[in-house]
Image 1 (cartoon, rainbow, N blue to C red):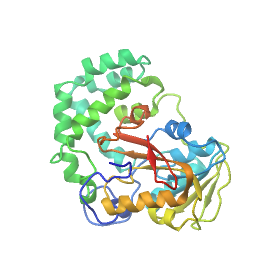
Image 2: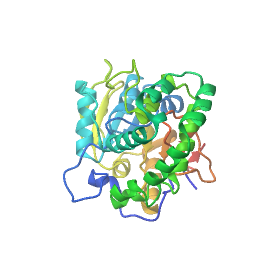
Image 3: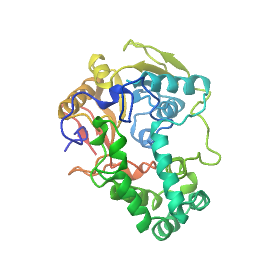
Image 4: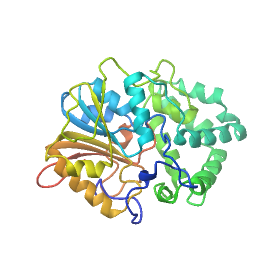
Length: 334
């Protein structure tokens, strides 16, 4: 299985096109993600040196800001106009983070756990998140948090016939891996056993729904500016972000060959079918220069190629984080 392999049965196009996660009547696109759940330290370690031309998904703007602050020439693309406008407001004006659809869903899960399980009350979770010793975190997670009650609640929420599947739009129901309740708890356990909680922004967001004390409230730095455009030939400039509305595959296909030195793609292959995945791989090979880098994240469980750098990503949720080197002889993943 390649890093660009789909996670589910064939689907037409991409479910992200509607700009909505939840089932119900069609309507205006919504902000789906108030914050991003990917650790840009992976990109900063894998990408070529600063100054390189890189592409990311705009989403909430966090990754674009981190890459621009490190000195990259960033293009951030999103199909969802509401999400793109939100990212632009955060990057250009320092707008505060809002609660997106994803945060509302995880907040409901945390509230249910806190109401039914004393160990999951906010004060207990906050105390756990202040720890900075992974060995102690691993012991406390197993002894105080990951018990039968949590597993029952997770199964009721995250199994294929669980509460989450009933509220998601059909195109997203196949994104969640089978047995995701057990899968997610294993991924959380993996992260707390490896990374200090006290410095892990994503652990605070996922487990408590709050920003880590002392963390920046918005992704803006003094080096980040924003240019909004649609022409693929417009350069952002080092330390700046160019926002583009569109579908990432189409954008990569329209680019001149070798337009980018690196790309990072999270969730892009989660949902669409194999035709989309094949197009994406070809588009990356076209738009990223030979020897360039692609970081591909997926919620799926690892295939024969293994999880890649999933354990290095502090955001807890990913099953696969692969670093792919592009070239005329095809992509090589590790």
